[in-house]
Amino acid sequence: MNKLAFIIDDSAINIAVARLLLRRLGWIVEDFDSAIPMLARLAEVQPAFMLLDISMPDLGGEEACRIIRANPAWSGIRVIAYTAHAMEIDRQRYLAGGFDAVITKPITIGGLHATVGHAPND
Image (cartoon, rainbow, N blue to C red; front, side, top):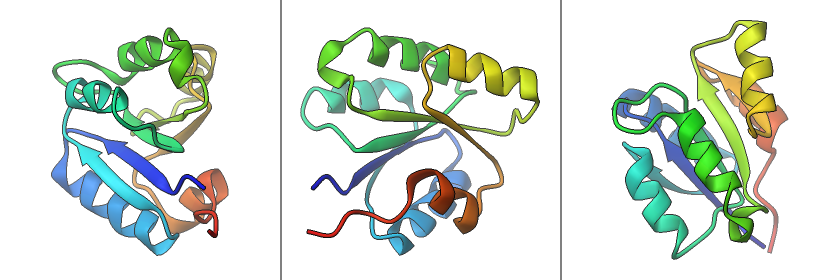
């Protein structure tokens, strides 16, 4: 079973918090400070899901999600918007743009568990 999760965020603090919480839920985590190396890594391995920050300087989460959704080989990956933009209109735009779910920052163990659950048992 796939226990791999990606975190993509340009904030080291946000990555550290999400990594800690995901590990508590049993996930194996790889993190990236940019969507560009994450997309390169997808050619090698595919996570069960990813937390993808919306606002990043080089390639934003919405554009990265479009790239992922355009590749049929990556159709099984859950892409979760990981953002401080918590307005309902933003949430609806993310979902309409191909994201499977939205988690708002600051992240909590309860919110994360409700969205991704525990890693599957072997």
